[in-house]
Length: 410
Image (cartoon, rainbow, N blue to C red):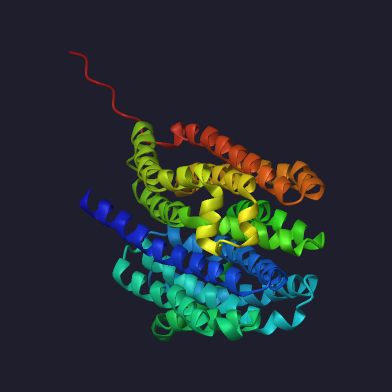
């Protein structure tokens, strides 16, 4: 129990650094860049995030659920990462061209590959519960760009932001170089077999991650492609406000997946529900007050982040909707983490499929007709659907859990 508690605290502390760095960087850029520039940056970044979720499914997810992620498995993941990045670059080029900034491709591509290498190192440290080096490296990766952008905000270009991210990610991934020196040759000798194993384990999760990413980013892309750059910028800026919950949401996922994976051979179904319930209560206690403040005073919350005269404060209804959407995301993330811990990839896929289909159909119509407001309504509905489907499949895990021995008759 003590180790579990320390693991939870370390995982949440690390995720707090990651989410704060991302959050503060986005707020700084939203305050410093014109809406059209911030919208273009957000679209390119959203494609990087989508490509990162594909990399997570094929490379870092297999690493996370293996009992001994260090050594050869880590070296394999580091070798596979540049292969994935090369395959992803054409898609990133399409994203940059779609917002009229094809020249961003070299800087954004460098950010992509360095970020993914750093994420491999990060996931290996998480799986091994090595929280002290994890926190140190993530502070370099996520707080470093924030300091650099803050210092350069008066002469800021979005290409420079991606280069700063690439440099910080490369520095935080430096431990990988020493590890490859010790294990790289062994890993390379069986790389073809490892690629097949990674595909077998990660392919079902790949579909789920892609659907989740599309349902999250699709509305932003629709607004941008509908020539509504201010609407796209406002959607990201408002999401930044409710993203104060991100350290808890992603921190719980980072902790719960390996926690369930390690204990699944001994967990009874009631034990599993209690574990998920305890993590859910901790998460609700941490983010519930934040959501209540946003729901009660959305205009004040937006002005606190972007200034009294910010145009983003003119959307209180939309901000309330996004707070509700993030509350749904929290529940869905807890259910998904438990399912991933049991390698219930098919259930995770269906959990993402139905909300994605809703977003691509009804959500697209709402966004196209109502703009920013429609995108926020669709986000709430898709999030609620994802949480509901996740709960249904969590309850269906009973046959995979350990049966409790029957009480001896007296």
